[in-house]
Image (cartoon, rainbow over all chains, first blue to last red; front, top):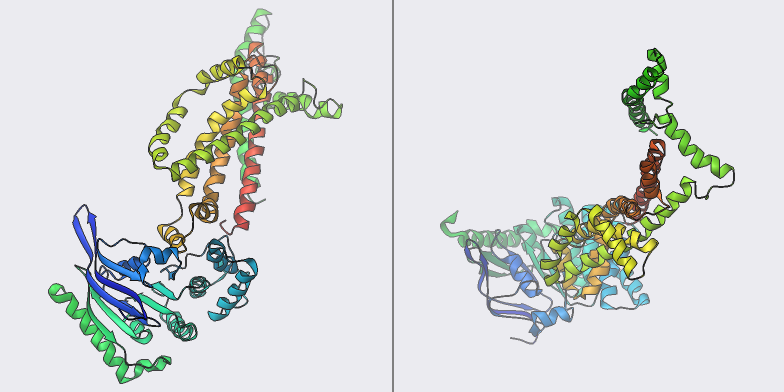
Length: 261
Length: 290
């Protein structure tokens, strides 16, 4: 484990006991995520990509192997508030304003009032929602709500951002726009981002590394290092390099499926 | 005001049926009276009589209305609005027991719900007892509560309020357990990722999420409280309160008095439930949940 390893999984396994027998959500997963990496997890449903992310967040408890986050156990990392987690749905509280929603984790973590205000303003600017602080969630579009939920995950001092299909419920145009903004944000904040998706273009466009997973049992089948530069305009998606990586991801996904398809 | 017409239509229909029923139920007495006096009685005379008897089986609406006016508005105009013969006075007595019982019941209900949601032992053990408590007829248990409390030196408002509480805590427990459990797994996971304490999760997520459920329960609880307070006045020989008016009315065959007390109780219930509805609208609108 090198010094700038942020997340490290060793032989990680997770088996759920169900009425239909055990389900191997994860089996012998080995992975290192370095500081400042943007790692995407891609695979079909049931491949364990969300489960892996939830293990990093200590929302799920592995039944085998070890996982460390910032050099400590996932639970200690969670207690130290080492990461911000963005769920598939924005999950904003309807009774709080956008500002109030972003302030929520800050209140829980005990930041003082003036610091809260300063941070709310900063992250609203970061996700391009300045001026919406006093608005209620229902007054915002779905894309804006998801941006607010990202702002909420960025508001406190966590170096890691775990994102579980954050743009999955949004339409293509909004998604492109948010992907572009997310990359800019990543450049500005130097956070480590783990990003679950089932969209190949999204994974290739965003990531420095793409982790391809396959189901039954959930495992990693390929890890692709992206040769694309860190600064990526949207039209990089038409370059041969981009298409080549996308092709490799698609091959990986197909291979993982084996003869089941 | 768009729904005024349908409401008035229904009211008119009820009044019509009421008048017809008064004729049907009271006609026998009118005929008997005429027979005893050895007179022939015409149909119009029967109808007129059935609507103006002193102790009818079913008093006509205008008789009840006149009785209510005489014991409320007219007395208030005469400056005796809170005299012991006034329905305002009796409503106030019943209302105070209702309100105290409602507050106690709501408090007990919320406390039990919190226990059930946060404590596994309570979750598995309390609910069956809560449900069992409501299967006991309140009329059977009310005199016992009054007698037992009287034996330990508690009398007056509190025993009646206890009966109200006994009826009103139930909908609050059921509603609040559901309400406190209404946050989605995702919202609870989110709290976990922030390492929020149990009390932070309660105050910031569970309690606000439960508000729509709470208000619905409060409406049912308020109506149940009023029933409890009235029932609490029946077996105790209470001399004041709408329940006492009902009982006294039935002793002396004063059907008009019974009906005016009933209508007064219904009005009181409508006002109280309406107030909670208003509070609900304001609160939920403010919370963006309406």
